[in-house]
Amino acid sequence: MSIEFLVTSIVVILLPGTGVLYTLAVGLGQGARSGIVAAFGCTLGIVPHVFASIVGLAAILHTSALAFQVVKYLGVAYLLYMAWSILREGGALTISGAGTKAASGRIVVNGILLNVLNPKLSLFFLAFLPQFVPAQAIDPTPKLLLLALMFMALTFIVFVGYAVGASLARDYVISRPSVMVWLRRSFAGTFGLLGLKLALSDR
Image (cartoon, rainbow, N blue to C red; front, side):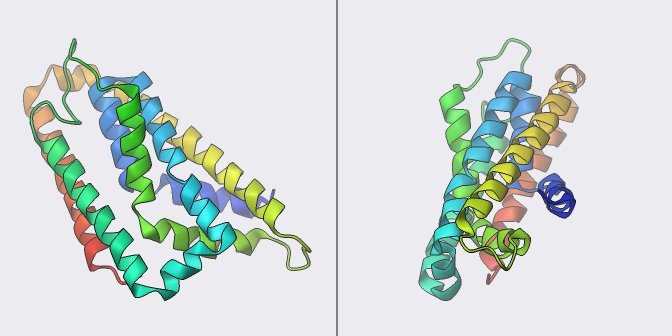
């Protein structure tokens, strides 16, 4: 495993995206354990994209405008749904010292869908992973799988860090309702902007 791959992967994972925002929101709203569950869900959401890139399905998204648009607008719709869910009272970013927490299964499914419904992830892996496979490799598939597993492991580790960090701010936020209102609006607005950015993107 090259140091270049590790460094590049960590930089990519650290960049704020839908998975990071979702993990932060759940960790802040429901604590470290739920945040870790969200991190797990977001990591699982990478699996279909890795599979698609390895078997060449991502090339279909790249060449077929219709397929890309269908997946893209499903992703846009879900991002807007998450924005609404966070903004409403009792939604994804409800913080209460003794509140009812969302079921782990629901948290995982939301995390999976946020990544699955982003067609750009497949194209990212299609362009990213082959760069670290030796040109002389007879069968690149095992190497690609190893790189993908390493990327997923790094994603989970980094996202757990985000979840735990967010959970540490819970007491501060719970004691300041105005901060909660600001955070809810900020997270919802960011998800909405990400949905708009995806809607306006070509590839």
